Every structure is written in structure tokens, then in C-alpha cells.
Image (cartoon, rainbow, N blue to C red; front, side):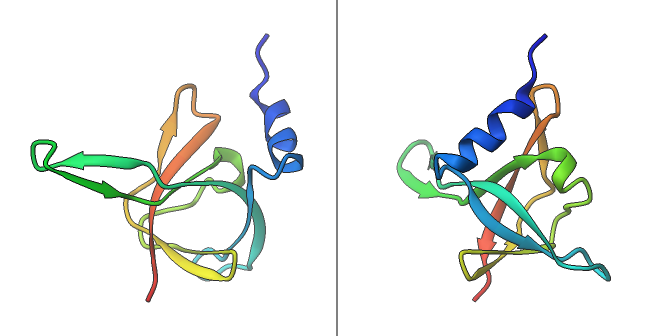
Length: 101
């Protein structure tokens, strides 16, 4: 049987994950490992290329993550822009984030 949990520690050891800190509203700050990507997206009938920062994480690590929540990644603060979406079987989730200025 396929076990996706074996990959996350290996990704972390290889430096593919970032250290983040998440504080749920009214809760206590906790560390979490996230994948941090900035894929290019084509918009306006492919006339404009844009980038949207995203995090990927184990859903069980941040089950309560929601739109508007804040995370700190590498000393920078980000806000979840869109409600996170589970990927595939739901073991991993992705969330679009925006840098807080």
C-alpha cells in the first residue's frame, strides 16, 4: 500500500521544505514544514504571465488553516489568500498565499 508520509521527512532532509510558524486565531504558535512554490500562471487569454505564491503541506499538520490566516516563512509574514484545497487523496493540501506588507 502506498504511504505518502514517508516522503515528507525525506523532502525536509534534502532542503525541499521551509520552516514555517503558524498561529491559529486565538491559539498557540507552532512550527510546521511547508513546500513553498511560485508557479507561473497565464491570464487574460494567455497575454499576461503572473505568479502566485503557494504552500503545500501535510493536511494533518494544518487541518484548521483557513482563508485570512497568517504564517511566517523565512522571517516574512504571509496571509492565506484562498481557502486551502486538498490534493488527490487529501493527504496533502495547497494554499495560495500573499505577502503581508
